[in-house]
Length: 105
Image (cartoon, rainbow, N blue to C red; front, side, top):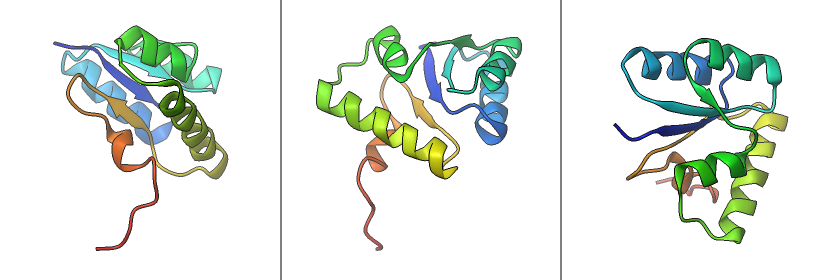
């Protein structure tokens, strides 16, 4: 199974990571809160030092502009306490729908 990167492992993100690990998924987690990140590590997730560390360790092919946008978006999520987390997988990335504001359908 491919490793899953997960940004934001607080209350909701941490619960998702715990479930992924319980079901055998290898998870690489990042959160700027060291206490929260340690909790994810204690649940069995590998931990990263930054958003860029997650991107590099997963071998994602993102250009500098996308990495910058991702880092700014994640910082805004933390500051505004919005969106529980961002998950990366080998074939999908939840961030792709959250880089720009979504128009109502």
